[in-house]
Length: 370
Image (tube, rainbow, N blue to C red; front, side, top):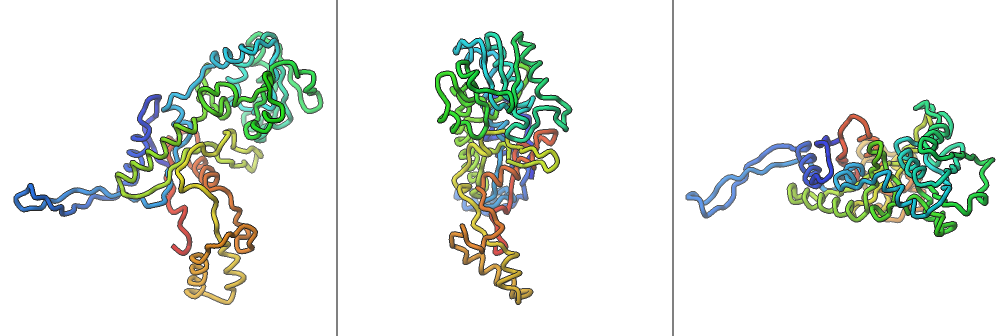
């Protein structure tokens, strides 16, 4: 369920906005309870109690963009360029950028501003999420040419290399920035030094992910990914406030891209460093589920109707084993709850005109036996 909220700006009370929006969307009815009250002449009074269609273990998701926006987690192109100028390099080499105007154009603009003379870009045929370096079939933009024009607009030379023309030894003495989204820590462990850095190292004082997961806000500003600390404080406060209002113990998470792979373009929708930078403790772990249809077709093949229902329900209730490697779970890949939920939430909210940056997921943890 997508929850509409007001347009969120820097400095807004996001806890209040999220809680109020969820309660407004789930408002069920009002009942009146009799309350002992010795201050009244009759010794009792009626009290209004609002009720909501919220249950324990419902999940509230908040998209990362509004978390960062409310926290004012922005950085300008000039601030990025000033940080990179400290390396005092005539040339800057850029390895494995994502091919996205929204995700990388402002970063590349800052790099071009900071370089003394030239920017060298290593662009494989596809980036790590599947976008082509040439013409994108959905946007019609040739990313190689777009990035070249962007660098040259800053008055710097731009050379672009692919797998056949790149020679990393040729650029080992210039500032090198590795732009990988999900393997940057390993790259840094293998190659990092004073002049070999990752995007996570740039503006890391503002966010532990640095520029990873950032988005273009306008022609001179990027919105950063939320910091883990502030996002964790947010989800715990929302959880506590919902409990105060409804007496229901929900789970809450901040979600980013959810790892959906487009079946037509072959593009992974995972341009963030994490699917979820923060979540309440009840979302730890992975599903531990039996494969219902396998039991229905095999072990309980002779049963029908109520007898079959009861057999399946009893099997689910008795499922307290570790199903890793057990054929009872065949076909139920045990992905993390937060990864599964982030995919569901991201596809539900979208990033366009819906205006639903908050998602309420009901019955996710219910089973056939509940």
